[in-house]
Length: 188
Length: 137
Image (cartoon, rainbow over all chains, first blue to last red; front, side, top):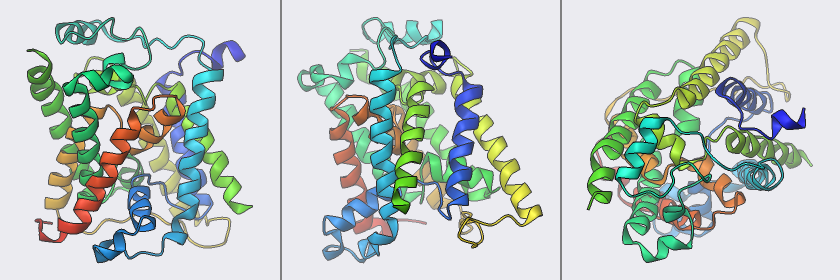
């Protein structure tokens, strides 16, 4: 059993378990949505002084901050106790494309070292990815009023048309980044 | 003590997204290249099962444990904010290879560098709070 658990989980295990998390949160009287935590953290940090947008009762979202704390612990447990082999078995086309962009041994480790380790500090492109990418995630999530969990999971599950439009937007942005901007950034 | 429930659900969620490799930058890149079915299988099966659960709950009148109706999400009509905001989010998602959940989960995975991305996401949230009202919605 443990042998199977420590292997990478296939989509038909991970996907249904995500649906289970959503269902358990609904049964607990809550709603699955991660990016609202960014707003809550801004509010706690005092952003309400700069904009009414942050004048919310953050205590009502305490449960979600605890949930996020749990995800960090879960990531730690899964990474250090349940992952003897950190490689990611990527499709051949993906490996080729990444090699063309000078990524070293794509998929050999869980994350590309040039972006996710200290190496990033000596590569302006990696810093650009972390800073600009992070900014766009935070800004876009509030502009669209939800992220992957709020729109792609909670919204689509409840047959929300606005969520479908948002997911189309996710793909317009994602495809532009992967097919046009990232190659332009890394191919020089 | 009620909060403990959310801690446990969060731990479970962090394990699922790590073991399903959904938090890996590589998997998101691969998804937007349409090279693998993995991420489509993950999101697709989660949505289909979640949809069945919610439709069943509506037919059967299921309630949350506190006796209240489910807090189902319902978005106001419109398209501008969803399309533009979604596109901006998608650009960021494909850059960092992580949406908000995975950003936090990656901290637990030991990738301290994502703290930079989380900091930037908080700034992005703050800037939206300042200028959001002036944007088309």
